[in-house]
Length: 206
Image (cartoon, rainbow, N blue to C red):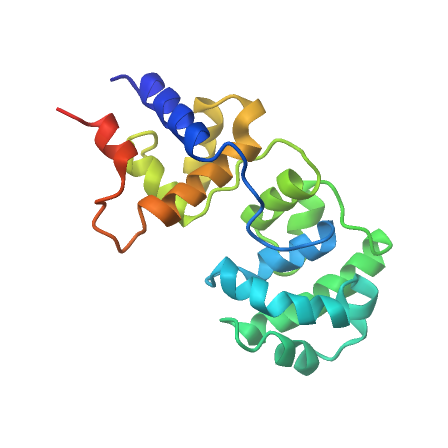
């Protein structure tokens, strides 16, 4: 099976499994999405969704977040890993949104990635899921599965993202990256033995 054939099989099987893909992080607008994604680093989406209702009730806008002390933000997100750093980032992110962008989340990678706590992956999620621009945010699930499926030899998520964008058409990026994440969680978790991972078996059957 060629690389192109493998990529087509992956896409068609994922489309059968997940014809609709909800965005895993609860949010109401691009700002709350950006905050949720920033909080999700090294933490499960489930945990983030448990913490954000109260956080967004108190500070669901940059204006409200900027008025809180770092300690107050930390108290609201204390159950999440790296809460010290994330609390500082959320306060500064809100301040810079007000200073530079009138409290509106910008729609370019450059401006997004200049905000504290917003790396390339977070910016890609905001661009794709918040604003509908074609993007292919690569997390550890996608990086691992694409290597497993021999669709990338990327040493890191940046190289894997480039490969993904070359392999699949732009029109499917926003949906497909979520489909791969859902598949990874459900059928091929990192600590699993791969018993349920039928796509890998299909790709490399003798």
